[in-house]
Length: 103
View 1 (spheres, rainbow, N blue to C red):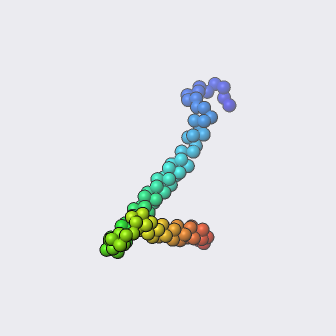
View 2 (view 1 turned 60 degrees about the horizontal axis):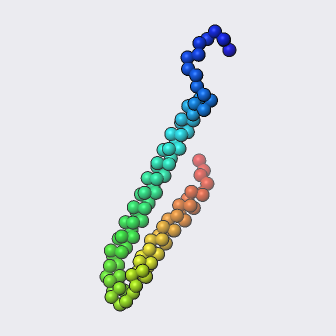
View 3 (view 1 turned 90 degrees about the horizontal axis):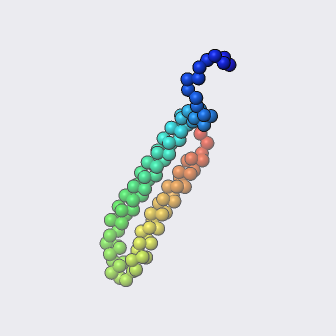
């Protein structure tokens, strides 16, 4: 090193390291944001399908309640259908994610 050169900017090792990892931090933030958006879209989709199924079975649900079914039993029936739908989606997603990519 040349001892006659002036020091124009003094940075700590942490600052220098932080500058080098900016692209990785941006990529991680973008991936996290896209993951949250995907999760939100999946939740909205499951809600929409469940709402549609409940709307189509409205008469059946009314008859069940009129014949003495407990509200929690009817709720369990509807939620079970949604959970099964979500489990199938997760299973398919995991199978696709685990499949090797050949390029």
